[in-house]
Image 1 (tube, rainbow, N blue to C red):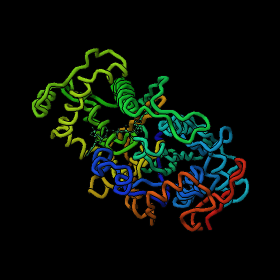
Image 2: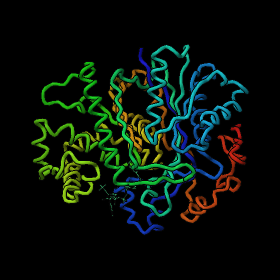
Image 3: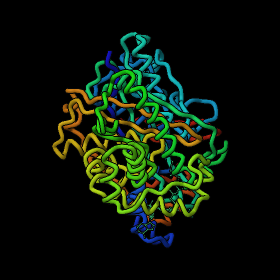
Image 4: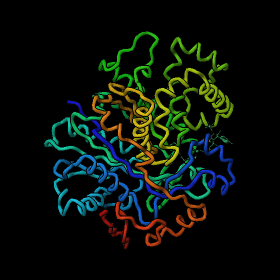
Length: 459
Ligand code: COA
C-alpha cells in the first residue's frame, strides 16, 4: 500500500521585518544577510498569535481546501518546539479551535499528541502516522500532521537574523495524490548533544551556532549512510559502477534554518558521496585545491572545530567546490526551488523543511519540470540531536494540487514593521495591542490568563 502526503496547506503570519532595516539597526552588511544567510524577510507573529493558532489556521485551510469532514480524520499530530504549555498538548488547543468551526465534539474520535525533538519532530510524526495507516490501524481514516513554530532568538545575538514563523499542515493517507513515501528505508540517528536547547521557562534557546551547523551536517550524513545501505539492500535503488546514490534522488528538501544552510548541506553531502568516485578527479581539477583532511580525522566535533588550520582550509575548499559546474548543476536542478520560501519567510524550525518541500513543488512546476515519478530526498535535522533521512516518489495526480500553488498569494498581504516596532513587540508583546486589526478570516488569541487561552473563530 502506498502512503504519503496527499496535500498540504501553509499559514504564515502577516508581520515581517526587512533584512535591510535589520542590517542597518544591528550594524551588519546587508549582503551578509542576503547572501551569507539568505534572508530578505523574516515573518513575525502578532501579539494575538501563538503557534497553536498558526497550526489551526493551516489545518483549517487544509480541511476546507479538500472539503474534509472531521469524520474522515483519525489523527491530528502537532510537532513543535515552541510549546505553549508544559503538559497540555498543542493539538488539544488546535482541536478546540477547529471545533468552533465544525461543532462541539466533532473531533472527539481523533487521537494525537504534541511531538517534540527540535526541528526533526515533524518527520517523526509523519513517519509514525504513515505507519499507522500502513498497519491498517486507521479504520479508513486519514491523519493530519501539523508542523508549527516561532523561531525566536535573543535580541542582538547571531541567531536573531535566522528568525521566522509559520505552519504547514499535511494530509497523510493511502494512495496519496502528491508523494508516496518509500518503504523500509527511513533512517534515523540520535545522540545526546547541547548544540541548541531551550530550558523550561526560557523563551529563547541557548545556541552554539557553529557547533550546530557542523552537527547538522554530520548527523544528516550519518542518517544518509544508513538510508543508502537500506536502499541498496532492499533494491529500491541499484547503483551502477561510478554512480552515487545522489544520482538516483531527483530533488532534495532539507532542514532550512536559513537558506545558505541548505546550500551547504547539499555541498557536504555531495562531497561525502562523490569523494571515492571516478568523477572526483574532475571535480578536484575544477576546484583547483586538494581536499583538506583534519589532523585527527576520527576526532570529535569539538576537536575538528578547534583544528583552525583545517577549518580554514575546509571553508576555502567548500566555497570553491560550491562554485564548480558539478555542484551547480545538481544545486540548480535538485535543490534551488526548495529555498525560495525560506528567503521571504525565514526560519520555521519544524516547518522549515516542509515549507521547503512546498516551495520545491511550486517553483519546479513554474519552471515546467515534469515531477511525476521523481524521487524526493528529505534530510531532516533536530538539535539535541537527531536526524532522519527518507524519500518519496511524486505521484501522477500531483499536478492537480501543484497547479494552484502561489506562495505570495497564499501568504497574503503582509505588513512590514520597523525595527523599533519589532523590539517593542518583543519587549511588551501584549496580545491586546496587536499590530493588525483582528481579521475574521483566521484564528487569533483573544484571552490569555493563567495559561488559559481563548481563541476567536474565523467567520
Ligand atoms: N557579504 C556576504 N556574505 C557575508 C558577509 C558579507 N559582507 N559577511 C559574512 N558573510 C557570510 C559568511 O562568509 C558566511 O558564509 P559561509 O557560511 O558561506 O561561509 C555567512 O555570511 C554567515 O556568517 P558567519 O560569520 O559565518 O556566521 P554568524 O556568526 O553570522 O552565525 C549562525 C551564523 C547560523 C551560526 C547563527 O545565525 C546562528 O547561531 N543561528 C542559529 C542556529 C542555527 O541556525 N543553526 C543551524 C543548524 S540547526
